[in-house]
Length: 127
Image 1 (tube, rainbow, N blue to C red):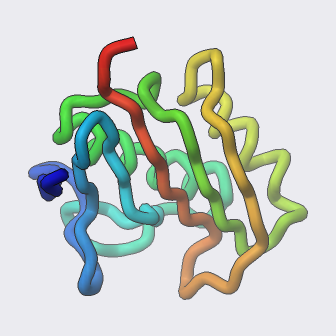
Image 2 (spheres, rainbow, N blue to C red; image 1 turned 180 degrees about the horizontal axis):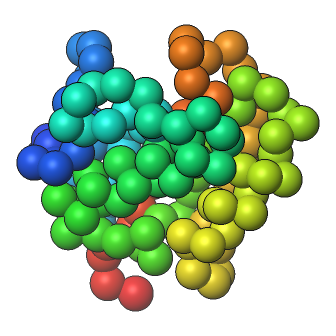
């Protein structure tokens, strides 16, 4: 099966040797997104709520560039620098993903200069 790279015109540019998104068959895989402003490349927000919002907006931009929406997401992996921020992160997260919510794993991680990173898998095939 071939891979099609997805790069959002209004999304963040890769900060390393990876694709922001790939479509493979009926699935879209989105690399870990951070709270980076696509226009400036700088981290957005001082709070977990602000950073979660920007991170999900970046995820959303890549999904949309690939023809998907947050409603198509079936699996999310999230990394938080401080798991005590989980409830505050979760309140923002819950407003973006419609029911049924995607499956999710959330772990504590050392991140470089930001509080949250999120990657996702979306299914865009026929039901």
